[in-house]
Length: 122
Image (cartoon, rainbow, N blue to C red; front, side, top):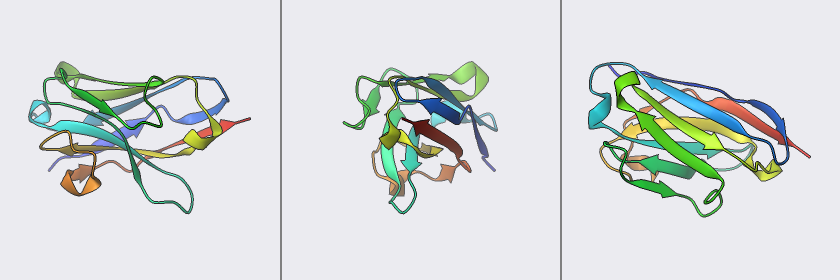
């Protein structure tokens, strides 16, 4: 059974930075591609970023490209999301997910964390 736990969320002003982390249980972390998704109130969950099993391939939504950086440390079973130049529209619950490949659609991910709240104020 795979469990994912996000941390690092909080409240920050526009232009600030936050670093989210997701720790994955088990010894098969390196076999998973990892993704970050977010869901704002009254909106559908949307893709944010993804990273391949080895970490050599990354993919970003246009809305965060150039501001967010996804990375992973397979030795620590951890995937991170460094968020810079935050905007109010980044406010959402952020979820990490594990899947077979770096898909942008949530349907391809088999395991999900419970989310961490990110709030960006003006």
